[in-house]
Amino acid sequence: MKFSDGLGGAALLAVAISTAGLQLIERQSRKNSPIRQESINEMADEIVQYVRGMAVVKSFKQEGVASDGLYRAYHKSKEINIKMERNFAPCDALHRLGLYMGTMAITCITALLALQGEMELYMAIMLIVYSYIMFNTIESANNSLHILEMLDTVAEKLQSIEDAEFIDKDGKDVSINQYDIEFKDVSFGYDSREVLSHISFRIPQNTTTAIVGPSGSGKTTICSLLARFYDAQNGEIQVGGHNVREFTCDSLLKNISMVFQNVYLFHDSIRNNILFGKPDASEEEIIAAAKAARCHDFIMALPDGYNTVVGEGGSTLSGGEKQRISIARAMLKNAPIVILDEATASIDPENEHLIQQAIGNLTHGKTIIVIAHRLATIESADQILVIDEGKVVQRGTHQQLVSQNGLYKRFISIREQAEGWAIG
Image (tube, rainbow, N blue to C red):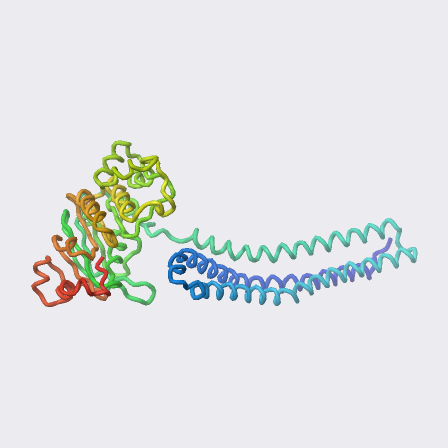
C-alpha cells in the first residue's frame, strides 16, 4: 500500500483544528477559573454566615433579608458559570469539529481506496478503527484538560498557603525569668486603617494593668500583638527585656495564658478540653485546676463527670460553665503572664461571683493584663491605661484618674448609660 496524500492531509488537518480548539479552551480556562473559584469562596462565606446567624435570623423573623446575600452569591456564581460555559462552548465545538471531520474524512477516504482496490480490506478496517481510537483519546484529553485547569487554580491557592512564611521564622527558643512587659512607640493597622498609633507603656512584673476605652479603640489589638498573633508595623514590644520578634511563637506563648469572653470548647470531653493547657498533666493536676476554677462541682454533677463530651463550641454548657472551664485550662498551664479579655462580660451574678473567685486564684502572683467593663474589676488595678482612637490618652490608678477631668472620669459618671463603651 502506498502512502495516501488524502489520508495524511485529513489526519493533519483534523489534528490542527483540534489543537487550535484545545489552545482556546486552555486560554479560557486559565482566564475564568480564578473568577469561578472566587465566586465559590464568596458563596461558601455567605452559607457559613447564614448558618451561624440562623438563631438571630429566626428570632427577628428576618429570613428574607438574611438570605438576600446568600441568593446574591448563588446568582453571581450561576452567572459566572453560565458565562464560562458560553465562552467554552465555541472552543469545544471547534475542537470536536476537527475530531469528527477527521474521523469522517479518514473513513470516507479509506473506504474509497478499498473499493478502488488500492488498499486491502483488513488495512482499511484497521485504519478506520485506529482513527476512532485516536480521536476519541484526544477528545478525552480535552475533557480532562478543562478539569485540570480548574484544579490547577485550586492547587495554586493551596500552594500559596503552604508557601506562606511563618511569623516566627527568625525566632529562637528564648527562656526568660523576668515577666515585665513594655510597648515602645508601637503602631499597627489593618490594611489602610490605623488601629494603634505610637503607643508606649510599661507593665511591671507581678502587677495588674487594666485597659479601658470605647469599642474599637485598640484594646484587644494590644493583647494580640503581645501574644504575637500579629507583628507590630512600627515600634518594639518587649517581654522580660526581649523583643517578642526574638521568640518563636511556642517559646513566647508558653509564658502567656489567655482567657477570652467568647470561650471556645472543642467537641471532646471536659477532661481533654482542660488538658489543652498542659497535655501531660496528671489526673490530680486536672482536678486541682478545676477546683481552683470553681468548676469541679458542676462537672461531677454531670452524668459522665470529666468524661462528659461537650458539644461543638461547648454548646451543651452555659456561658459561665464554659468560662470556668477555660479558666481551669489557663490555670493548668500556669503561665506567668495572664491576659483577661472581657472574661466576666455577659455573665449572670451567680456565675460572676464564682468566676471572680477563679480569676483570683488564676492571677495570684502573676503579671496581669485585664480588659474589662466592670468597675469592680478595674478599680483595684495597679495601673489603668485609657485607650482612645489607638492612643494612650490617660494612665494612672483609679483614684488618680477619677480626680482628673478626662475620658476615664466621664466613663465612670455615665457607665450605666453609655452604650458605646465596651471596656474590655
